[in-house]
Amino acid sequence: MTTTLTKAQQSEQAARRERQRRSRPAARRSNWIAGLAGWIWLVVVAVPLYWILITSLKAQSRYYSSNPLVPSSDPTLDNYRLVIESDFIRYFVNSVVVTLGAVVPAVAFSFMAAYAIVRGWRMRGLRVINGLFLMGLAIPLQATVIPVYLIIIKLKLYDSLLALILPSTAFAIPLSVLVLANFVRDIPKELFDSMRVDGATEWTTLWRLAAPLTRPAILTVSIYNGLTIWNGFLLPLVLTQSPDRRTLPLALWTFQGQYGVNVPAVLAAVVLTTLPVLVLYAFGRRQLLSGLTAGFSR
Amino acid sequence: MSALTSRPPRRGPRSILPWLAAPALVVFVCFAVIPLVGVFVLSFTTWDGIGAIHASGLSSWRTVLTNPGLPHALWVTFLVMIVSWAVQTPLSILLGTFMADRQRYRAVLGVVYFVPLLLSSAAIAVAYKALLDPNFGLGAGLKIKALSQDWLGRPGLAFGVVVFVVSWQFIPFHSLIYQGGVQQIPKSMYEAAQLDGAGRIRQFFSITLPQLKYTIITSSTLMVVGSLTFFDLIWVLTEGGPGDATRVLALDMYKRGWRASQMGPASAIAVILVLVGLALALLLRRLGGRDAGESQLEGA
Image: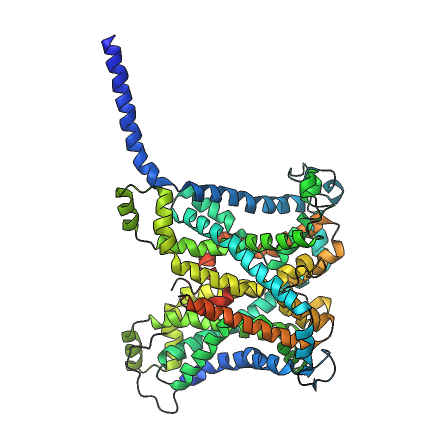
């Protein structure tokens, strides 16, 4: 009898010790409110995405009779075919042309300007230019679309892809300069000095020294701008007119206007227009996310 | 912007540096600075968007300021701003805290969280419009009455939908900012609190939250100034409707300009938009923010 009691006591003590041992990491482990929010948010985000994906693979005839949250037993790519036959290849090409056409000069020009601002900080003119770019960050540039529209008409560029490229480039410059200048500033001054001793010009120093050393920042800025321009809606809406100048977001909107009742087809278009970005996300998640918060890391 | 520490070499008038800044400057001046000035100028003219432009003094301003549509649009804009701020901020802080812990499964959840960031506002709005359709959407398919309402057809509901979709799109971005903020809080503070016997919830309120002050200001600036530029999302979802229920300033400008062919009054609305944006950025900076600058991140 006594032995069993002791045993029970012992096991109770052991359990208490065990509990104490475990309670310490447990306290560190979790803030349950945040944990709960985390799981609820997962549902809030995942359910619509899941619904979009499975519905885009359903035949339209089956869509209305099926349970919307159960994937089709015989998935079809017909919706995707309809989307592609609705000229989406052309819209895709337009989006690529506008995005590359704006990002490449925007980043190149911004990098050159950032280099000049950092290296020529003593020149008042460059400081004024820097101030101008900073001002551009504080102003909602969308509010300037009416004069942009007027300028584009005057330049006889209305309804062309160049009409989208020029303002997109301009809008991308302020943030790009800010971020890139922060990185150029971090390059040790000795490196610049040794380049000068070797007789390198500013132009050579810019591309041979500064560009390789700030490559991660250049990539980050390019991704951020690329995503913004790829997803842009207002400029194409205001500055183009004919169907064959549409970029993907605008095409998506008109496609819904046309095929609104055909929900699977509309959702296939949503998936298709997002696919390039998703592929990018799959391969370079870290780079992409840091691109999205460009300017905050510093 | 701290001054460059290196001794700048003496540069003659032939220094190439100003030329390096020239291309960016030219593009920026032509398509951002001149338009910014232009929008003020155009607000004193009459223009239908196609024909000739006539100076017309204050008539555009009179049209805009006496129209009851303006206070309404301002009100809706502020309402969207405040309500979406109030919804997004606590959730983003919680999610940022949640993701700041380095655990494998949280990283996996993170992959899903960030997908909405990649979709264009147009794609999100198109998808939600389909999802919320009272006849063909998700609610109708599930045959649940409460879910198959006319979400975008009734003013109060449509406003709620706009706030929800905005939050759905931007909470990931802000939780990413908060995640960075939380990870920068020194571990030692938590260890000290633990020795004092503070539980995890207590730690959150007395360490995490106060330490996030600057992150909160940065994120709020982006939310507030960014909310002025919600155009595509609301346009595709509701076109400002039903009636004028979701007609924010940016939509008011677009509809005036391109739908009603009144570019003068539309420019006046754009000027108001610029001024409101500047005022808010300055106000938030006063509150102790860092660079008021980054407001464009969310915009475009």
